[in-house]
Length: 488
Image 1: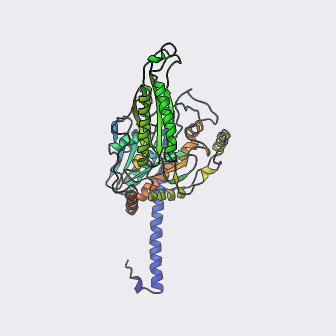
Image 2: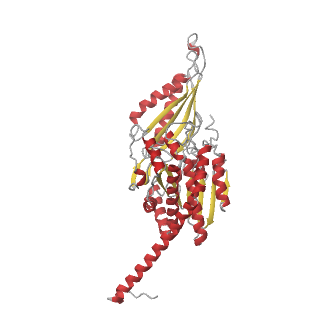
Image 3: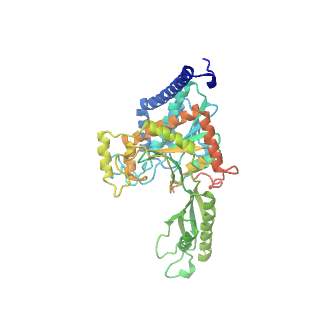
């Protein structure tokens, strides 16, 4: 077909050209919708497998760096589908990278799978631990990892059928809950070849955020003194607990002299065994946060200085161990906009009568919920937001352009790390949100695979946001992954 220059066309000829172009665009749009429909159909056709996977991981409820079975389930499904698996990356036995395809673009999908201690809960709308003091998926990571695998599997099938070139990469990332698994992977340059990275998180509504978080240092300060009888020979003792308390007092004074958007919190993890014995060991666990990692570093130095001063003033010795360190999230508006478009195209979640009854009973347990039932059916507007949390995804977002979404896997009004989250995350309310996340990530990856200009735009924004002189220096330093941190 030959199209003449617009200036050569008048009347019927011009209208004919417009009609032809409109038809081509309509056909192209229909083909896109058809491909996206096939991606959604694949996930729906295999949803029982993914629901079963998420439930098994929910049942295992394995803590950070101990997720042997949870990691294995995800790897087995991917390996059987033809993904190339690299296990035990970055010195972490449960971490893995699964790749399929070749060439660019390389689109990565994050997968988490660790649980939380002390949150064991049955799938009932009242508090009922399955194991007293046991573990539970209060952050929905059983859904997180499974959705990432589901999205990757759907993309693999589409790429096989379409012949589109590119690489799908699933990153199995352990120990998000305080273990900073992704930071060790970032330090080993695991994410360096990714063009785009997608992730999501369970929540109580459906939204995409062009958002950032708080960078964080986490460390345990250990003080060593001399034991003595507290009544009979106190002059011979040097209290390690005095060192902790002196440090805490100075840090509390420091709060007045740090940026107002900073956060400092601590808990004394060891303070002695008996009042009549001067403790020769005490420990305090600190989190120090700020949205800007460059502002966080000097605040952190002052906290360390307080600890050193406390040790000197109390005649004790002090050492500290950095447990975790996270960058803030670097937002990417291009990726967030594509995610938002696809999330709105799919739509929200609708409860069955049983799920509605379950949700109402859960909702009745909230003292002051900040959301209403029915919110799960809506898609919230795309917006910028500073979230007062920290996550090891932050480090990933400074290495490759990244975007994320949240879906309603929990009853509206549910807070993370609660028994209500564990209950909903182990039944169909949770898996409905999981499947919505999987579909949204699959469609978003499709857009980046089929529109190279979007990849270029996202990377241009990324380079501008982080700055041309940026150098990634992990806050963890050169310490090895604390594989036993959940055993201590």
